[in-house]
Image (cartoon, rainbow over all chains, first blue to last red; front, side, top):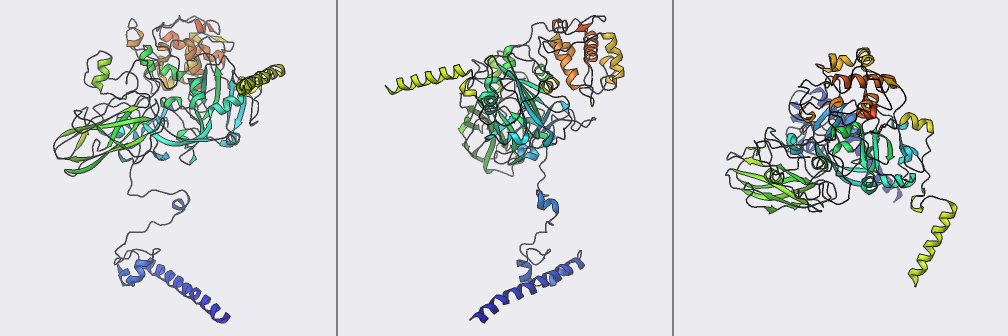
Length: 441
Length: 193
């Protein structure tokens, strides 16, 4: 019995060895014949099962091989057939990189997006005046909290990870994310918003650790880049839901997103989300930093509307420059978000705003996060305009430009500029030939 | 009965906290992670300047000194001769001086409500590649030069920590002020969108 068993064990081993040998030979042959079509001579059965092999023309499943390179193995590379990329924003605006090598505004390709997470590589980028990307060694970086606190605190990046963490989905949107009739596609109209899963420590956890004094009202968050960009934010917001974030989409922040640590101010305009965070100063009054100078507006109302992102949505499919192959069933799909909280409902109109239908959510709406909505639609091939609008959990509604102009009692001129951040409805026109264009044009 | 007992207990512990002179209980440190920065570290790191100018360092400078520094420190290379024609943002208005400030270009030393913001920005962010290397005197001088270029102050005015916050800027009080933040409330009270 024992002898027999050992024989049986030995057998497959020797078979495997001989198979490996023959594979090696095959590779040699393949290499020798590279560029010719002589591989057809190799047995069909072998070709269909040998996933390590080269192209086998007789195979029904004969895709070329992606060579297992070091970079493919270590960090991963997307398919060469996926070409979605970020572009400079706005069209004709300041280039990125510019003549100084600085990056200014870069938009995310929303037209290709699926789901709600923006890949970190495709997250939009914006900087205050255009700034150099600091190459920060996290071992040398610290975050200091000081000012009106009982105990000022300096934390290393390792220290930060010892506090209890939170992981939350949040969008960030740039104030420059405005749509007009001249932009051909949704990347240009809406690409300055992105949504990631952020991991870090609640600011309230750290503030409690420092002991905030009673007269504290605001805090100033400051970055470590060369201009040391700083913003003033109400302390109540800091205590409510701000996050000192070191993680994005399951890994460390990207340098373009503030590595090694950034501030998240959920729902507020992008510039508040201080990157390369090095210092938080607790103060008793509003401090006008350069960023606040950038927010300067003639009146209180317009200033207030330039701070927190309003309820907003946009259809990403079908959207500008896309082409519908012909009449038939389509799933209209888009993104909705609000700085007021979670999105409550999204409605879609496929007849230029006469009738509105409730869209379904593809993921549970979360506070200050993108939600993917969709509506099945049978296109009959006639010319029409499609658009979406949303309502958030505190009752703010996304409105048409006409409604907003009406509230301000001003006429709607061509390319009317919505006061504050532009969260107005975005229409897409669909021509009889299925071509999709900007409905504001 | 139970609740009365509880409130008695709470009162007792509050009194105890008071006796021990400790800060509010809810804010007592719990993790003990990190270190206390030294006063010197904080002094070097804290570059925030408020419009009251309380944090401004000693020093002074005028526009004539600033004009020389503008060339010496190579500001002119990016911002152009007397603030115009460079690749970096213009620093002097090209429009008629009598126009109201909101009708003019968005230029920091012209539109800013406080001269302290000009000082702060030069101090923290200039010159490109050598940020943070200017002395307080140099920053006062350059601030004076840019304010002079925009007809905000006379050429011979010497700026210092006392008079910089008091410089009367062209915008006056014609700018929006931040409102109190209230969680879960609309962006603007009464605005439905």
